[in-house]
Image (cartoon, rainbow, N blue to C red):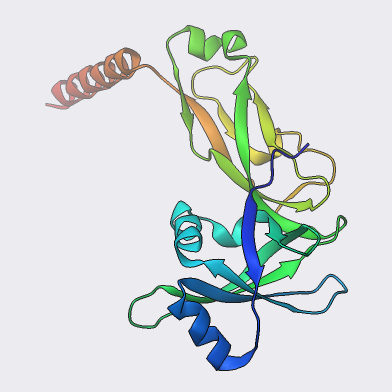
Length: 211
């Protein structure tokens, strides 16, 4: 099941139009709008520094938020657009859409790895190389998985783990058709060096035989 959905605190914006939006910015806020979900659009203000912090954290458009507005029922929302100043590239307006429990949404889900002790490749000194620590999945808003799990049991050196090798949570689906790589078991540096030396010796012997 889903982990804790982050809160995003906002306040109702009084007035509409460019004048009210400019006033909000003068007061250190970013104006926004919340729409959809079978309810009337709601004009809001979000603290500028709070929003900027969220944006710098990354993947703002792929994060589900619990929108908290005084006097309103908490609502699950996802951002659909961030308007920015063309010169300073700073946020000037945000659009959010309300989500029902049955709404489908694309989110990045954390990947966890288990049973390291049952992986022969890791016992032999191999290294788990994680290519994708998170995977974008299409999930239901009411059933967001906290993570997906990769079972390393039986994985040996040279093995590659693809998305299709993983059993996804019920209701979740990958967002791209290709069978992309999640991780692999790389050979230890000593073994790689030994292999490289062997290849070099073989090439040298071949060259001597050709002379």
